[in-house]
Structure formats: structure tokens, C-alpha cells
Image 1 (cartoon, one colour):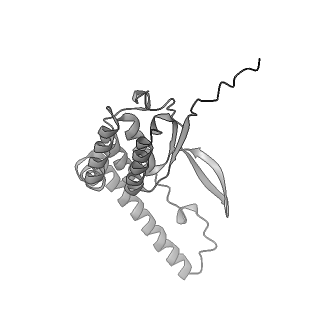
Image 2 (cartoon, one colour; image 1 turned 135 degrees about the vertical axis):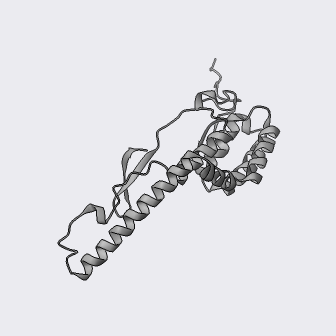
Image 3 (cartoon, helix red, strand yellow; image 1 turned 60 degrees about the vertical axis):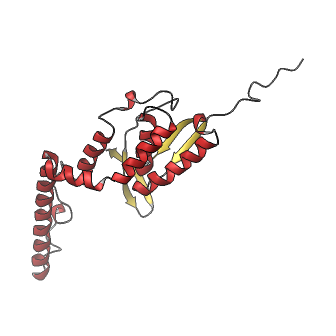
Length: 196
């Protein structure tokens, strides 16, 4: 007697990809998740791959306690509030904002000085003889920026939770991967760079 195929009649797990695009992506993908939920497919999603605004929504989905309606309301409230005002508040009222301002001033001064030196050397026709990487790129390392301020805002949004504390019932797997910067080696060719 032939064996029955064990995969017949079982529903496959679904992988979901959410693109970037900031708050607009979050709003768009919230509608997509609503449609998947209404069709009874959202519970079959086993893996979510996301970037930028899509990753914020994916993290909210995996972090929010309660049912889909609770997640939807929380996301709508977050979208109404926005991220700009909390980021500005963080910038003007925290040590991180002060560091970012100091870094901006230091790098701006460095680049202005490099620009002036290039103009003077160019006017004296010495530019080609003067080889310095400093003229092309600042050596000042940015320890704080708009990105670090926004990271603090998102940390507050997610109540300082980490990946291991995400809901296990929303996805079968939650893994943290290192972000990899890519460096351009020649036109249209990107090679893996250092870990960000």
C-alpha cells in the first residue's frame, strides 16, 4: 500500500519581506499585515526579513503584547506621534545630543579648513604636489550623530528590550545578524566591508 504524502494538507510556513522607507513604509506594511491577518495568513508567518521602516514595524509586531488589534493601535499611535519630535527632544535635552552637536562642529570645521587649504593650494598651483588623504576625508571619528540620537528614541519606543525578549509566539525564529557595511570598489561593484 502506498504511503501518504505527509506534506499534503499541511500549510507551509510563510516568509515575509518588509522594505524600507521610514514611516511611510511602516504605514504601508501595517496595511499589508492587516490584510494578511484578515485572511488568516499572518499566523503562518515564520520569518520576517526587513529593513529600515519595515524593520521597525517587524520589531513592533514581535514585541507588542496582546492581539493584532493591540499591535495595530500601538503602531497607529506611534505613527501619529512620529519620530521627528522625540528625536529633536533627545537632541536638545540629552548628553547624546550635546556629543552629536560637538561632533558636527568638529567635522564641519575640519572640512571647512580642508576646503580652504585646497583652494589656497590650487591658487598657488601646488595642489597636485600636496598629497594628503586629509584633504579628501576627515580623520575625525563620529562618536555621536543623528543616527545615535534616533537609536536612543527607538530604544525608548521598545522599552529597552533586546531580541531574546521578543515574543516567541509571533515568529518561530528571531536572530540578530551583524550589519555589514559595503564599500564600493569600482562602479556597480560592492564588496563586503567591516562590521558596522
